[in-house]
Length: 416
Ligand SMILES: NC(=O)c1ccc[n+]([C@@H]2O[C@H](COP(=O)([O-])OP(=O)(O)OC[C@H]3O[C@@H](n4cnc5c(N)ncnc54)[C@H](O)[C@@H]3O)[C@@H](O)[C@H]2O)c1
Image (tube, rainbow, N blue to C red; front, side, top):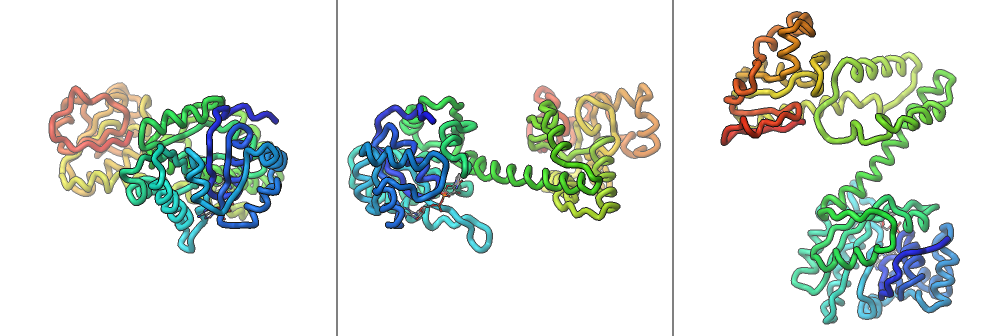
């Protein structure tokens, strides 16, 4: 194993010698002066004797080498650590509270301590927070402890997995940083100069949300894979083979497709096949709560849009786009039809513009569907976008360029 990065010699203190802190200390000690800090003297003692307090591939040797080379030591004394370092990495635990929220007591305490000690220093100090925390935490901590101090604060989420932590640390999917000043951005770029991963700069909240969402996504994937496994098993099929095929499709399945927030799904295939899947699970008596609740979430998306539109307290609304997605005239199970029907029912004055659907109406494609299933909606379709721009609320269902048509003081609801 070679550790090829972080060649700049820095004096670094690492707070919290758990899984993240020990791996971080071990790796950084290859090329830097590292002092690990923990409230637990047993962990501190173990490290100072050249032993790892955690079981993790490749870490034992790195710790042993670090201590032997005098690059790594540990202490329970935060003061010694802060005064003798330029950069502090915070990796204290943020476990769950009874109510499910993150317990931020360790993070709060350690940052308060670091802030008090930094006040004793003249030189610039960079604090890099790697503990997972809810959106808004870092900004709150800055406000509480670091205002008007000569300090850089960076939130830099950690993506390592236990069991392959060293490899993951050295080769992350990307490096994400959110910083409170330009100097800390430059220092972080220098810090990660040798890592062959893209460095992305975001806001604090985005970086905090990203870390939590990544773990939620992993949990979602595991549960989805397991539910497909149970479904396949009920047919005597090995779900791993089916999921191998699902994963082979990098165009639609394992790709960016269908993963961006937008509006509810609809159309002639997804609702139909999901319904049929759930029918089969009932027949086979297989309980799949995740997949069983997909349509509930889809309904919630429609309801959220309804609430957004209603919140403007106006009575005339135009919808730009009616088919279930852009580029088609297919109205079957279009969630936008549901939206439109809701507002007709509520007595709103409704106008609709969708060039594909208007054309279909004229040309005969989908004509029968329009006349048979939704004749009330058919009356509200306009062929010219300008004719629908006078409503108080404009709801953008598909990604139309409406800038040139828009009048002042319109209420816009963008669902595209
Ligand atoms: N474990 C992982 O795989 C992993 C991966 C990515 C991110 N994270 C996140 O990183 C953070 C740390 O995770 P972990 O698994 O290493 O935690 P951990 O519970 O294993 O270790 C936390 C350490 O912090 C120490 N500590 C608490 N208060 C302290 C203080 N005031 N000063 C110094 N040390 C203090 C504790 O004694 C403990 O040794 C968490 O927010 C976690 O969600 C964990």
